[in-house]
Amino acid sequence: MATTNPIDWTERLRGWARELGFASLGVADLDAAAHAEAADRLARWLDDGFHGEMDYMARHAALRARPDALVPGTVRAVMVSLDYAPEDPAWLEQAWATLADGERAYVSRYALGRDYHKVVRARLSRLAQRLQAEIGPFGWRAFCDSAPVMEVELARRAGLGWRGKHTLLLSREGGSVRFLGTLYTDLPLPADAPVDEHCGRCTACLDACPTRAIVAPYRLDARRCIAYLTIEAAGAIPVEFREAIGNRIYGCDDCQLACPWNKYAAAASLPDFASRNRLDAASLVELFAWDRATFESRMEGSAIRRIGHERWLRNLAVALGNAPASPQVLAALRSREHDASPLVAEHVRWALGRHGAGAPVAAAVPPPSAGVP
Image 1 (cartoon, one colour):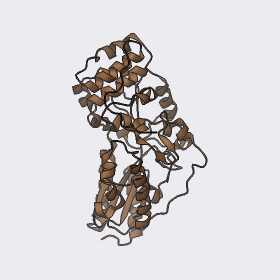
Image 2 (spheres, rainbow, N blue to C red):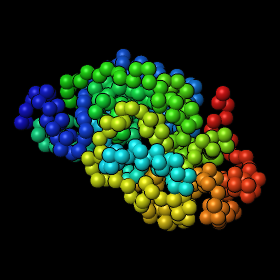
Image 3 (cartoon, helix red, strand yellow):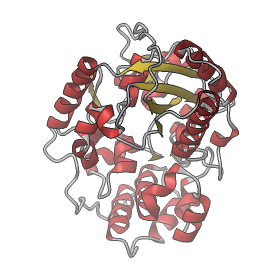
Image 4 (cartoon, one colour):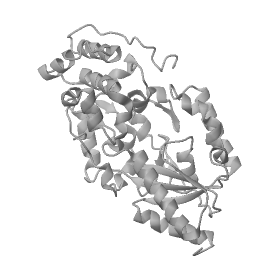
């Protein structure tokens, strides 16, 4: 072994992490008491039904509370962050401009390029392998939003930032426009200290949410969240939220766009997250014309591909219903008025009804927000 000092290991990891493009690295102690407190908050969130159709959140809650149960022998979590903001310094203004243009599609900035799950996990694995080549074998497993891991909580405890009122991790250096990665390990690395919170009395994220999904500071009702409705929810989008969705066809960034700390967000250090397929400028009509083969081909290697063509069309139909009326919009909707998918056809009929070209139809599938006060 080149070194046996855990402090030296951590410093080497920080340097290698920077070389791999990561913005920051910290180490979280998996203190049982602290993890139990976070697990209690998760349990209350689940009891309130705020997870909607995300049943896996409830099924794997125990593993989130016990890292050593998910990966035996785990004693630390090495946490990393990776910037993904667009390269243009005016990206915030451009994002707001796209949201204001009802003819264009809005895709959450994190999904414009390659699938972040694969990018972050691959680089995190390279980081672990590099240390292993230096000090010899040790136990590790890399994650990026791919397993029952409390990533934001662990990143907070590793000193990478604090939990914002929108529930995302915030840092003074990069705001919240960062992916998080987790490396569970059996190495007894020295743990970093959490940083102070800096949200104060600001409520910009709560005020900006189109569907009021942030029901209180640090409390997100996923059933009302546009990111959940356009990505996680498999059935009909509840009618009461469709108008508020606007032209957001995959995810929602409003709480981040409104956050003052994101003025300091750094541009992505990797080319992987640059926009592909003109997703930062495409028209709704253009994207609605994609058939299944085109969708699967264009979305190869993208996080968007996992929602499938049917939900892609469902989301676009809602956005077209909110778009300014035009012959092009009406023609696009008419082209799928009798789509083979009942889900798509229902949303198209709703959209046509919004333009006075048919009677609005209530969702045939019970909405995931049923019973929400």
